[in-house]
Image (cartoon, rainbow, N blue to C red; front, top):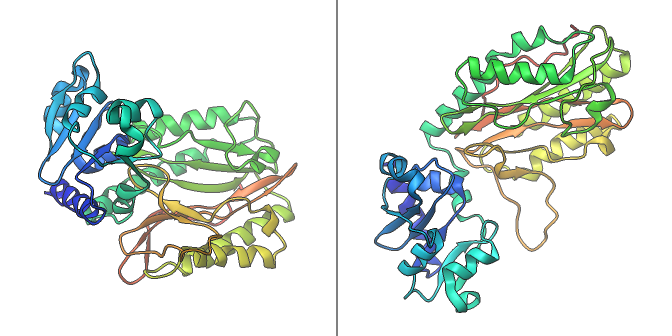
Length: 361
């Protein structure tokens, strides 16, 4: 069973770190280790057993979904109190530092929680970064579903249409096509609004000659997709075509580096070199990519590496990442092109089938 293997891998990490118990709260990690898809849960992993705690709303759902752990339905005292009872005799308890609040820490560890709790970061996330063939298949399907609506969205790229209307159409088409919803709020940004990398769709109207950045994704069976394309509202100026060409060149250069064993800053650097050549590097304000899976942003991160105390991460077979350089000129607009990519044993498989030539609609 997949969940059995995942728990075994996590227990091996606990063994190496000499932990006899670990309490997990991050919902995506709970789903990865047990299959639970609800919004309230706590998992206690020990060397020979695991205990899953939730509340009465999820009694039946936990029974149907949770694998590899004994299920406990918390009473009025709540999840932390129930788990604290299981952990009462454990002196050193691993916890997920980014997720754990001070209130939860005190409830789990009692008065001596500062001495009992061992903060960690990214243990499960490191496991999640290497996708199984089944996970890659789900991510491929999500990417294909998102791409399948692209021709319908292109019909909305016309003067006078509003960003919000196009974003609403994206959400509608994704659900109508079988998706479980948007993996993030769709970005539709036209004209100068496109200079905001994370612009929110507004009441702004598309105008003849503008570029419009469209970034969207879908949830499908728990896994996310992520793609970005930039299109022209009719014929666009020469400058827009030149900047689009530079971003596409940068994206292709980064894609060309993707294979197992390559340090992630090498991928990022390939895109930056191209944009530097075109004197656009200062307008590239984010990293070149990120992992995708049970969350829209996962390990590995593909950006510049500033730490000197340890080597940068490297790509591994089974990673699913995005490659998405962009250029954002204040007062003018932006261009971003993004594909999802599966790192294979011998190279890379592009999961996003949408064409990338500049469309002037």
